[in-house]
Image (cartoon, rainbow, N blue to C red; front, side, top):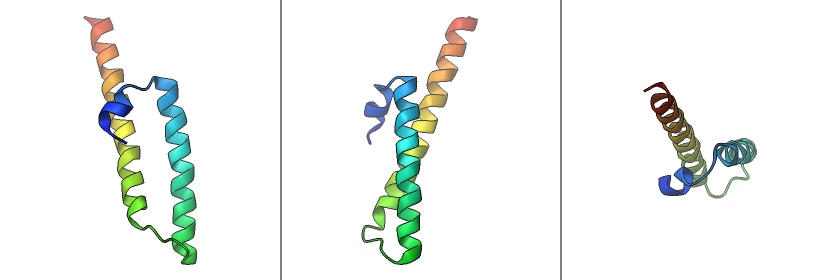
Length: 70
């Protein structure tokens, strides 16, 4: 997921996307533990996407705080 795609999402959409990604991450970790995971690169990609959503959400929150406080 590109950063521009994440920035276009609303706060609720980001939360929904985060929940979906965390479920997928759990399933992939389970597949890795049982030896059924084929695309190992997906775990890394998913972990970075989750971090990207957290970062952009934090930036949006800081912008909202700064604009309302000034």
